[in-house]
Image 1 (cartoon, rainbow, N blue to C red):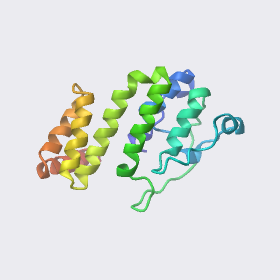
Image 2: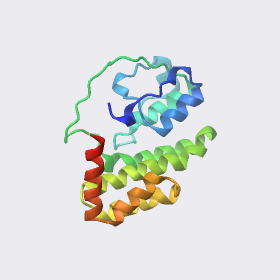
Image 3: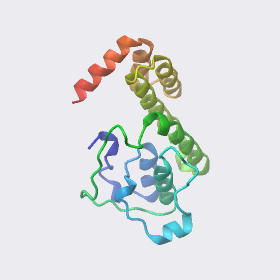
Length: 181
């Protein structure tokens, strides 16, 4: 399982706000394996159909944890197959998620202090997506925005350096991913 998909070890012991903050920082709930009570849909409404880029499930889970606690079951409930035709696409989803986190930071005071961290992490991911796809200009823009939000974050600084280096930076990204395997 990728690191970004891991549920915090103490998730069930967290307060509702702690659960919400954990999800806000890192979207780890695959909605396909979530069981949601009917009363949640009655109170909160369905997934937001105006969200077209594939982040409607994340927005819905944030709404749920804004009002209700959740429970994590440590067992595989679904299998997800990733391939090029998947609807999940960083270029399409990440800008949309930035809007969602901005909206929640404005509505839920307990999230406001996490906004720059989350935005920086998303912009970093978007920058690396552009680097891996060969778009150095867009990679530099996203990584520069990530760094501006968190200049003391080593990941943001390294991302910006690799983006500035262009093709050499792409080689650095390939090297980085080879280390992670």
